[in-house]
Image (cartoon, rainbow, N blue to C red):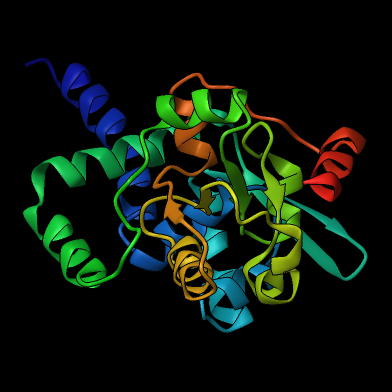
Length: 235
């Protein structure tokens, strides 16, 4: 192969490897997964990922150098966001590849969910039909900022930390489906356990908003509509 052609190929693969190096850390993958839910400050990301602010900033700088995230400074705070929707698609594709090729993932998940009731996944098509018919209550148990950035149509924002004191808002006469950030987020798992302890027929949706968007399904943004709040009070 001519020298200039070999140099060309080496240069291209070196650039491709920048992405591989950037996502070679479990914590950087977790930070990307969190940013798939919406933009976040370094402080919030550090708390969610159980990292120090300094370590979080270091990981984010590596992701930024690989053009996977962008940042904007407002006063004393720096807010990070995904560099584009294709980064979210990349994270979903990477997860899907790992689930397909690594049996360890399903085994780890199976052990974690063993003996927990209500963890059988709800099919997204079935859920959409039930929502349209008003046959199910859908709870978004992520922090409210993530709900505003994108949520399932008709979903009610009840962050996990508020769930127990807001149980009176959730009708008991119909099933409840809780969802959070995706299949490996534990917020919905804890929500289902709490709801079942209080007599609700609760199950968990494995999908997060990135999964929902990835399948071309509708996603709403912003606060709950006045109609949703009124309907919830009347239930």
